[in-house]
Image 1 (cartoon, one colour):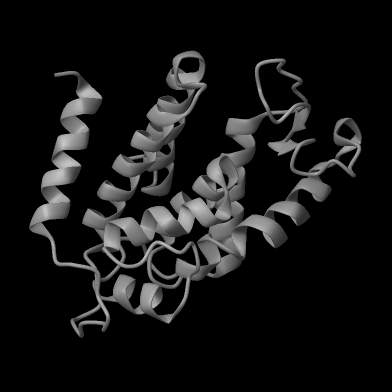
Image 2 (spheres, one colour):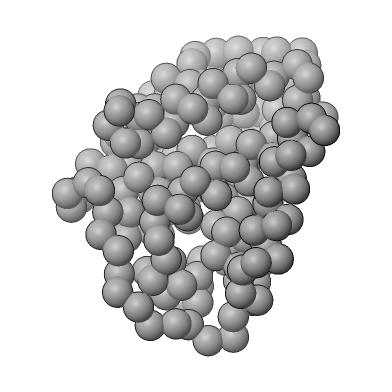
Length: 202
């Protein structure tokens, strides 16, 4: 049995041993984040710094279905933009408006680390996927919408465990993508680097 087969088995066993999808939200103590409170702007800036370091400048990889890309902003996602002429300020505006507000900003007050991880996942896989992965870990309906049930369930969850399972599911999703054989080293490096950065480089 290969690594990902074993990993899938672990996830299946975890799902079987966990409670079913909830119709109501349990009330427990809210676990504290390992980082002190910070403003959303500080968390976004740190998250964006990581994304820009991973994405780099202008690239036009013929194997990348996104086509021409600069600072991680692709022609496929923004066909109306001149990607090659995109500025850092342009990229920041796009990331804040189209990615951060729909992902990391939703959880920043609960866990700055998870906020950074969800933002990077939104950039890498889409905002809806970033939320669906969280909902999968929380064992609630996977609709890709961060509503009251998702928020309240996360507030009562064990955050370190949630992050562990979130990243496990993210890696499994990578393995299902068509580009896995070509890009797997970069994707795994990104995931491990993200965890180090989110937790202060520890």
